[in-house]
Length: 142
Image 1: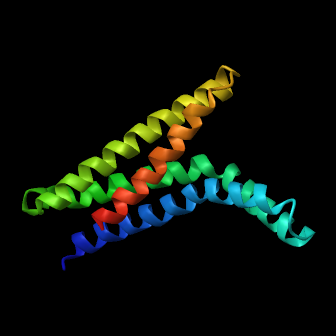
Image 2 (image 1 turned 90 degrees about the vertical axis):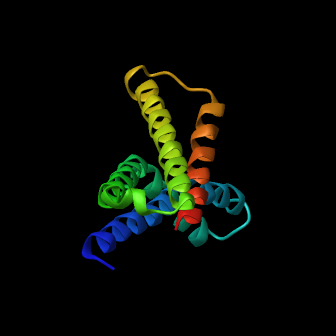
Image 3 (image 1 turned 30 degrees about the horizontal axis):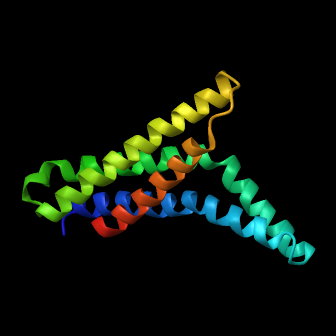
């Protein structure tokens, strides 16, 4: 395995783990909503702290995922023609889903931060579904 391939794999793996971590915000939120009325104070507070940390750094993690994916693509672009059809197909699907998720995330951010408007819940749900789809396709790509 060449150095370029190892670096590309490292960038891709880093992007995958950060994507899973960022996507866990939805899972932690569901956990917190269910646990806050059933569990003790320590577990509720710890769950809330984790959820707040993920929310605070959500955009940062999203940009890291995008940078990792682009870095992975740059490493593998020179040998793209020698890849299997499966690798090509899953890479295009994954980057397409990630691009849609980033565009949607930027629209959500602009709408809430600059325009001070609430976006419909379906838009947030679509952003979450795209993130989960990205993680699934990325897992299949690996």
